[in-house]
Length: 41
Image (cartoon, rainbow, N blue to C red):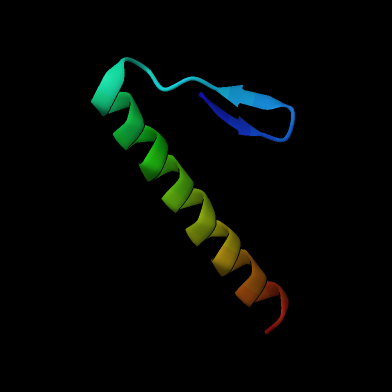
């Protein structure tokens, strides 16, 4: 179980769930990086 602030995220059933969580976190970090680049351009 992963805790982000007050939000609890439970991986859905073993390895596939963990992979999905990793993909989502990668997507979020990429989006944040792009957003920051656009803001500070």
